[in-house]
Image 1 (cartoon, rainbow over the protein chains, first blue to last red):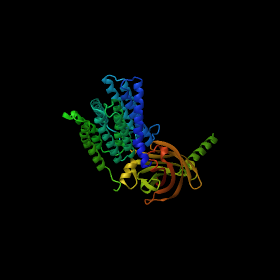
Image 2: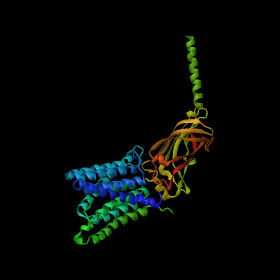
Image 3: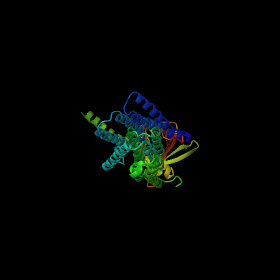
Image 4: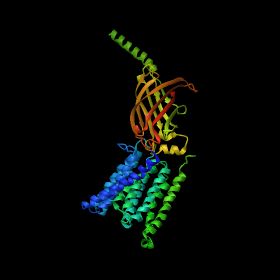
Length: 284
Length: 193
């Protein structure tokens, strides 16, 4: 694939597909009188944008033997969950139940092969619990942020984290996983741009948590992303809360975005530095 | 009655006499000597040059029966994580999810299912498992020689070369910048078990 083709598949294709789906599905939803149609459309748009980009970069085989080939299925399921939760929001226990189920599904899809008889890398129960807790904490954090912040205040730093993950994964031994992270970030970018002044769309949270989580876990377990860098990247969205501190809420949006960007760049920068320092150079 | 005894005696004599003869006619089985064996591969880079690599960990056994080729068998395993292209960064990339995914698929294996005498060697058909996908392939195995090793034990060597499409085995990432066809040469020396 030429550099131009790579850019097209990694950034343009998911961005355009997500944008078109967002506009089309949102219009259709509103026309049909579906409540919270924009939330459902956003979940569908980010899911479709990711799956289209994934197929363009690394056409998944079926059945999906390789763990990377399982990620579009997880993204699709997460998008369906996001749509259902948007259209028919249930009591809070159903949200937790859904989070637990999707987290368990992501973990079993990504880590299942390590439980094969021949595997020498079987994760301990403690590791599984820790991965699950991290995923649930990320989900809770993003949902809480999406409830409270406007599109730009959350979306722009979210893109910084998304593209930061992409660079870290490329550095850590997988160009494909890095590209797939950029695909997801590009799909999210379409949603952020189309909803710049609106509240963040909650329906996309399951897609982002499941897909970014699967890509990070894939890189950490099967490529060479250092654990310290993975922790820094996962914790980066916690920095978004800076925009809720003190007088920040009264400041202009661009100022809040700027401050949040600085706060976000700290963990992202640390993660990139750790990934670069752990990676052997081509000249070595 | 005496004829019956005579028959039994003849039968016993045949069994006792023939059993060792049959054993000596059976092909000797050799265990792979990884130090004197090599699995080397070549793949196109950016459609302009060939990049070379090898696997450093190889195990297995083989038996070549010249008198009865169908009794021959070959079984080899290669540790995917032992891939070595002479560059640490490239090795990290090749071992990862973009190519071999050595953590998920730690072994490449081949097990013969049929062997037939060919023009310049043996046509060996078997199951190749790579990247979690098992497919039948047929390769030509050429016996290189037999002899005595430095410790006096019997040794034998075989060679084979073949080309496979990595995308046939689900290794379909970065096809284009990195070629789809992989040329593989396997040179094996085995010590008699």
